[in-house]
Length: 325
Image (cartoon, rainbow, N blue to C red):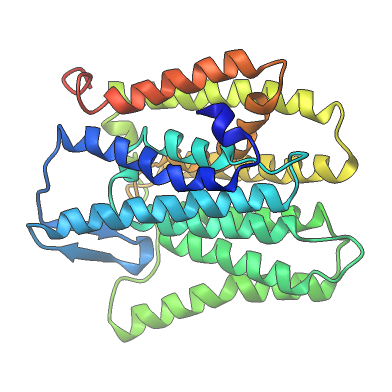
């Protein structure tokens, strides 16, 4: 599977829905559609689905959205030329790692926020020191701000975004102004929405997060998997950087910076009563970084072994392991 997706074969993406289907089938062996279902969209409020088959449709929409995000992330990886030739491992990594978490199977704001983070990374990676970056910077700021309205802890990514575009561009007042403008637009719409529909104004409720209060064995296993992926990815990235050019180093620095931003956002979320901490957001940078050890001849065996272990765990998690978790 790794070799198949690792080669420059675009039709490999046509097999990605089969991987998605495999995870959803094992999930359905344990869980059945129940309702009503609240779909969380952060400061925009919740949408409600009534009991019945609507939950199945919501799961289909969630699977489709995961697939779209995987393809978008893979396009970002290939268009930025992280590898000498096109590869489709980032999309596979995204699906397999995402399947370890419940949000993979549920329709909610997590998928929208993930889309916005992927699009913002894509915009930053298209910046060039010798070309004006006003449009790209505005778009990236807009996407980050949308993600922050859907998942409020991501407000910490907004100031971090300034450092992201400064990796590729010298500081210019005009570009900084457009970054602030892009960041402000989603919040202006959000405030108008709150006023017109008399909903609660955007705010934070400080308390221990439900993720910490209800920390379980499943959470600890997922956190351990994320940490293992990070360590192995770090080894592969370090090897990649030893022979990388200046542009490649800046691109990897950007991905790492987003990882740091997600870490501090989740750390901030630990002190909020809502929304729940979602460590699955690390899937976005890890899907890119974990591709490097998988593509490396030196580290391909241990990283591949780790990949298949997590793949098997993801398939068995909601069947044979469900009674333990």
